Length: 264
Ligand code: PGA
Image (cartoon, rainbow, N blue to C red; front, side, top):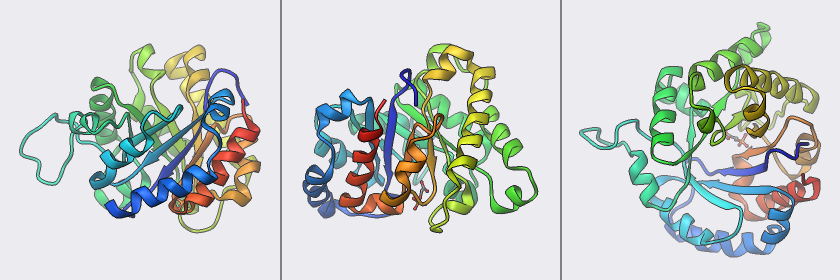
């Protein structure tokens, strides 16, 4: 646990939820979520990454709830142009969203995302005032071959090497072992802590020790209320990026409450 960085509990809705489902979700979430003032007091931020068609509605539903923000699941690196199907950083900013996910493993695996395209997206996000959450993580084959750490070091370095000192303070990282996403398998909290420690060392090299201490490194991969406490209690695990369990406002609210209990 650290006093220099927030604990971020983030929902990745992936390709789920239509317009009509947003308001009922947030009515229910308001009942299960921690009190906003208590969350701020504990240094906990809550973030939602919905699909584009409901992004503006989610940003509106959050309104001025303290410590809560909305973000997109991806952004293109150009501001505008002939890129059918793509969405740019300025378009995201115009919805009221303040964050964007970059390099989620589903984007890498299913849609050809590379370290180089991640880098370009991060550049565009930062240039337009969005806070990128950069996702990294090894596959099962890479882990079994003993390459988990070098893979994560490579992904992280290629994505964020050479940013300005002030820009490092605006990013967050999500370590998500690919074999743990949507599978019900979670990394052992000790193993996850080790990977987070390693990622922090990379950040120290890239951004300097002071900035590295301010960057939240979230864990993702089958986080649910039952395992959140053990994960969030580790020194270098600064939050959770939650997929499946975030679709249910009760479960996601419970994870956020655990975040506040652990606090900072
Ligand atoms: P999961 O997804 O919680 O369903 O494993 C996490 C993610 O992909 O961000």
